[in-house]
Image 1 (spheres, rainbow, N blue to C red):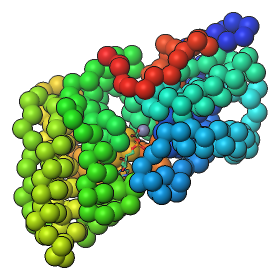
Image 2 (spheres, rainbow, N blue to C red; image 1 turned 60 degrees about the vertical axis):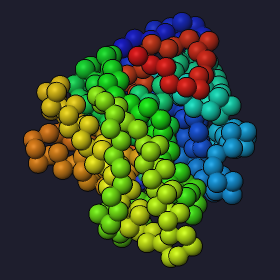
Image 3 (cartoon, protein in one colour; image 1 turned 90 degrees about the horizontal axis):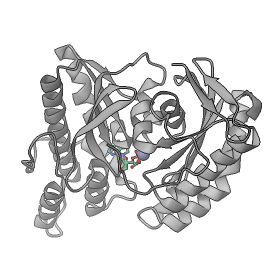
Length: 345
Ligand code: KG4
Ligand code: ZN
């Protein structure tokens, strides 16, 4: 990877190669994060300040509170990242920041910090798409190269993406209603688990019987998904206990089985129909034990399987730096704006 970019201030060309350090900032939702990554793959610093404790009280993320918390944390995470990596701003080749999709007030905090650093140190600025960044988490500490099929499962998105090269990717399937993480969080709330319910539901599911309840798998065409019917089915199941003691672990396990087998089925079909031999799991829900297990089982069928280690599955800035290196080389103006919803090709 060898690219030349211009600095923001003096328009000086800077070449980004395998020895270059990129500092990235992520603030799209409820994590304020800063990282320094060498050559898109080697993490020198990875700092994450999570707001989960604050949002737990409200049962979800309150955008205004989240934005204020980002403001409190941003300078601290940047200083800590420089300290962890043992470098200064002069050693950084480019500064990157998430531009979207995400909460606008939150994105603005990280993006403006990244732009300011780029201006102050007279280095290029790279705006990064948060979804690309989740995929790019798979470049960290690996030798992964396209082409591959990616399953992106997060709080806001569920997509199957055909990644042909670093510059060419197409969404070939996505959810027509709830995202997987959203379904996890909603079902978790139904059974009384605190926010964020996904990881807690996953834990309980591991203690339950995945075949205790037969839950409906939505019939959606192509590589698309639908999870809202499943959520309603769980609601009906929960209500059927009518105050009697609920087999919570079995409900969690049955829900998890339904979701993970649906995802696996479509990913397998995408692999078979494209002939691609590599599959990549990404997004916060890639931390899920059963989804990981099922996708990793594809190794037995001869596929190369990649999934980030846990800390790079949920929101972090190392993945943003990796994406700035491999995927996102189009935005580099100071005028780049944040955006709230996904709108990529
Ligand atoms: O990617 P992410 O950190 O934020 C978005 O970009 O959306 O994903 C957060 C989502 C939440 O819905 C959370 O409940 C879910 O990922 N999640 C999980 C697990 N760990 C995180 N869902 C199921 N099982 C898990 N182990
Ligand atoms: Zn995310």
